[in-house]
Every structure is written in C-alpha cells, then in structure tokens.
Image (cartoon, rainbow, N blue to C red; front, side, top):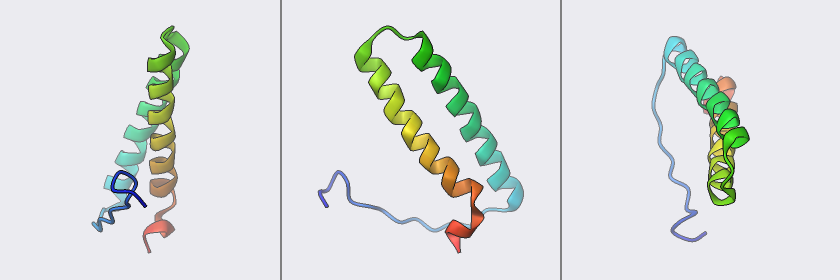
Length: 70
C-alpha cells in the first residue's frame, strides 16, 4: 500500500440514535450527489462527484450494517 491508500483504523462508539442520524445524513448527501451528477456539464467535476458518491456509498454500507463494527 502507498501512503495515499494506507488504511487508517479508528474505533469509536455510537448510540443507535447517532448511527441512524449518520445514515440519514449520508443518504441526504447521496441524493444531493445524484442531482449534482445529473446537472453538471463539466466532465472533470462530474468524475469527482462520482468518486465522492462511491465513498459515501461505502460509508453508508458500513453504518447501515452495525455488525461491521463488532
């Protein structure tokens, strides 16, 4: 792994309410990115938003499945 792709592991504790709020925020950001991708005409910006959307999707998968943290 290079320094840019090296994984950092952080451990923290969330209540169910906090986890649910993070999922809600991530879902909102995903929806906003879908709109942004649809509206943009700049290929470079569109590609950046698509990359951000992939990152958001990965975070959502982790937070929607609390067992990932066990």
